Image (cartoon, rainbow, N blue to C red; front, side, top):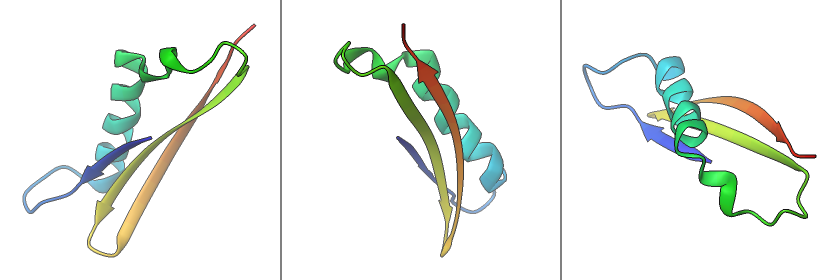
Length: 62
């Protein structure tokens, strides 16, 4: 999971959630997960006050 918190004068909450997900994918944070795990759910989550926005992706291994 990647988390982002919005401060004033920042991009939209949707953009920050997508940025969090892209960071997980780009830096391949999931590579250290056991090879026995065949399906990995990636989550990018952004917060703005009491609002939140979540984007996801799935990595399937052979």
